[in-house]
Image (cartoon, rainbow, N blue to C red):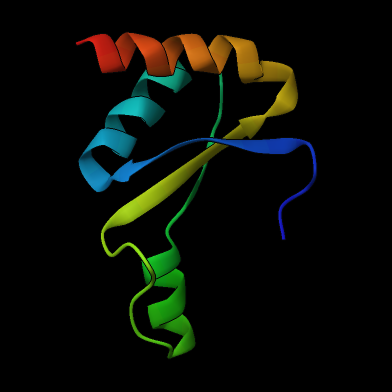
Length: 76
């Protein structure tokens, strides 16, 4: 599915994912967001396992920097 160079760093609500994406982009990390519910709906299968939740992936080369951003957000 995803290139093996990407790793999931976060799963959460649409609002938290939007904030995380914004913060990652501020430090020049371009994440990939996967919404299983929307993908399932578009494919005709209904909702996913966690409706309203999305996953955020980053390149493994940017993992250390991305984890720091996630930790900053969780401390807020």
